[in-house]
Image: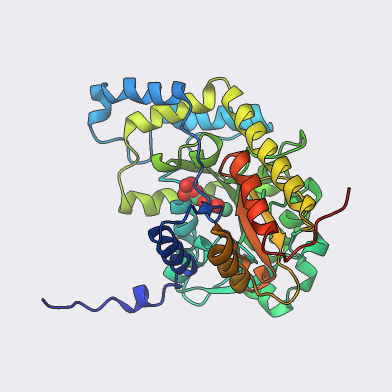
Length: 395
Ligand SMILES: Cc1ncc(COP(=O)(O)O)c(C=O)c1O
């Protein structure tokens, strides 16, 4: 069979670091071991039943068996606007300031193609979600990393970026609550960001994937709540985490009209919008009771508390995340994140994601997901304790 060579563009895409982790985990499972997988970010709970029922009903509606309107149904965009006003006090024009997306990932990967020319510079958080890199590569643009450090609460320090990089930058990705660090942003930080972006003509893309998941009674804030934010950027929201709808592929972008128009224009060429029944069920999710979201956040918070307590008890000096469903744990002295993750997999059959997979500044940490039961999280801590790397705290 003839082998067709991939385009230079495809060959230039970043290598998927976590693919090799999946292979390693598969081998240990194949040996028959009971593996506790804390390495992934796939929500473990089902979609709330009222949303599933809304889809079941909508599937039967012949209206949705036809092509959807190219830019999505107005009722869905109006529901998005109502949701933002209710949750964040942010007013949006549903037709001009909302774009429907096939999940947050699609929007994040599309954005560089919408706004950049080859060689343009994008500011990217390090550590950060690797899909930002994919979009930048597809647009043949360049990345300049913004280190996120513990001493700055995992917020970037714009003063640290070189003048040259700041002048060339056209786009910036941010993500709070943050994957992988679990950090949250403050209003002051978002306002500083909006000023910085306005001054240097940078479009801000705030990835609000974990927008619903804030702990200790603190609701994460939207970038659009900051003064001037809509002038300089957009926010990307997904149903994957808030409503456990990762498999449904539905999200939206909101904010700056010119950026929303650019996304819609690219999508006019790539797709027809989402299946109408999904749009109807998604609108139901936004407009009906949010008790399911409250319950989900308290489930994650309870898991977080159990994990942090168990790890501290075995002598692992960890800090509790303020949001997202990840904990960002420092590796013991003398270990790299990858060697430590390999060691936990081999000796304890516990999977964690090595920080280096999220960027150079992720070195020294591993990411743990709160996506399994408290019993399994405790068991993972017990298995790690047996390795003798930490010294239990005496009570
Ligand atoms: C930081 C971050 N952004 C975006 C996404 C994308 O979510 P989706 O494409 O399911 O909307 C994820 C999913 O893991 C994520 O962790």
